[in-house]
Image (tube, rainbow, N blue to C red; front, side, top):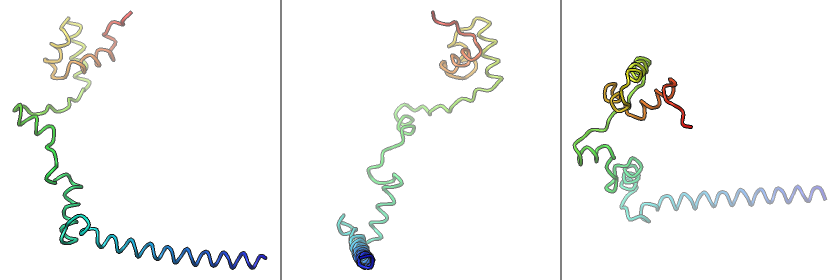
Amino acid sequence: MFIDKIKKLEATKARLAALEKSVAAELTHELAALHRKYGFDSLASFFKAVRAAASGRGKTAKRAPAKAARKAGGRKRRRRAVITDATRAEVKKLSEAGRTGAEIARTVGISLPSVQNVKKALGLVKSRK
């Protein structure tokens, strides 16, 4: 009884190995013919098209948003501002001097939401009740 189970196991392992081998051969055959399936003459032209599609350089690749905006409006996209301790001190000084958020943003060179975030972090914004 125990020996029969071992023999069955060995037979199953042999069938599994044969099945794996046939699947591998079939996969190799399909991959070798893949370029013809998609209308390419050679593997080299197929690989070139796949590389171009993967890198976004294909004929259908869209233009980057920043380039499109520059071309349409003529303006460059603004770089992200770095908020330093000096910037925070300047925002605090101008805020305490009674300047508006928009004036502070223009003077310091950061966006209005950044000014509001700095003021909030410094406790200069009144709470909403």
